Length: 117
Image 1 (cartoon, rainbow, N blue to C red):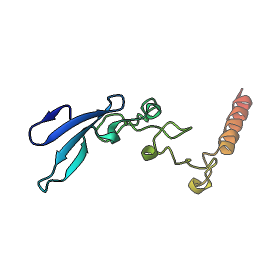
Image 2 (image 1 turned 180 degrees about the horizontal axis):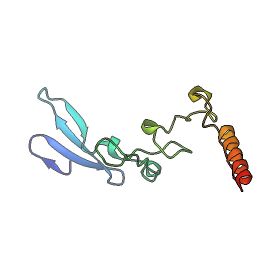
Image 3 (image 1 turned 60 degrees about the vertical axis):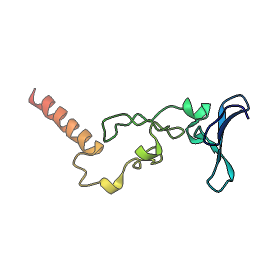
């Protein structure tokens, strides 16, 4: 075997030379193969090129998780949450600052300004 070293360990390259296996013999005499490169750290090209969340983390850095499709944030920073419904009636208190009340106040101020002239 090419690349054999002492302590009953051999390294072999498979395929295009990207993944290396290490043959090790156990104290019981059995041979086993051990990956020297962690396949979980090899990211697919599509995932590596995906846009990132960039939300501010508690450490003060930017989140590097990929965004949820069609959103600007990752699943941990609200990308899966659709947000509050339009015209949120659950947060309605008294209506004093509603669009209708503000328009009525603007109208009355304009009438008062015209009358005072």
